[in-house]
Image 1 (cartoon, rainbow, N blue to C red):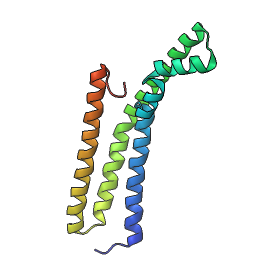
Image 2 (image 1 turned 180 degrees about the vertical axis):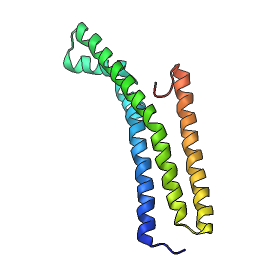
Image 3 (image 1 turned 120 degrees about the vertical axis):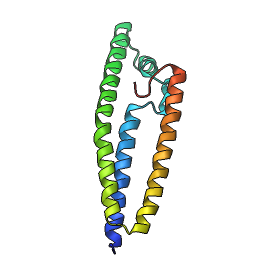
Image 4 (image 1 turned 30 degrees about the vertical axis):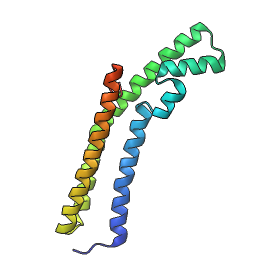
Length: 140
């Protein structure tokens, strides 16, 4: 089956964009290592930075910490609730891509997706290891 190059590129682009969106969502939830270095790694670091920059009173610092913790919990919950839908869209997208490929292309595509999934698992394992050393769950 012959597929137009434009359509194949479009489908691959959509798949890439879905990955990029999910990464952006995760990055907004997880602690960004550059931000950790700048702020100290948590909402405590942000409280310290904002307190210093804004000359916050003790009551303001306390309330700021509460606000940041509540926001973090909401963001983590949102991320967790979105994961199943993201996975579903990713699987559907991969199936749509497979439908336009030849048998040989499907085989190669499957190898590629296995590689991508393994890389994602390794990143997740490293992230979990870093968080467990800190005594925290990733994203939590």
